[in-house]
Length: 136
Image (cartoon, rainbow, N blue to C red; front, top):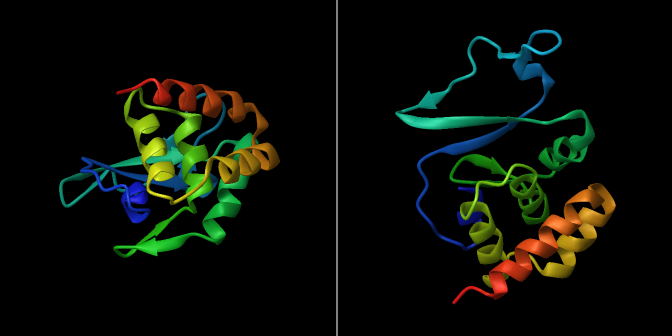
């Protein structure tokens, strides 16, 4: 839904939810979802993506999230960052390139966002752009 909210229409088989520490229980290595956090709704799988301590900027991005189809959607720069953090091969780079292609976000806006919030992702973003430029 997130990518589709920015004009890059594609089908999806799941919904990703960014969740803060309040969604989890446990200490140390073993962490579990709190009771009541769905793993599917209406037969649609829910992927819960924890916000790691070094990625708190994503929690801040939730404060300014927009809405699409009744769900909160991260801004395009934060959505790109989320997809770069744990990329699914082939799928997330296409999503990112589509968002740039459809004008939801510019390469310069993403670079500036990553520089300010998660500079370690800049190289991954640049590599994804180079790979995408070689595709037919």
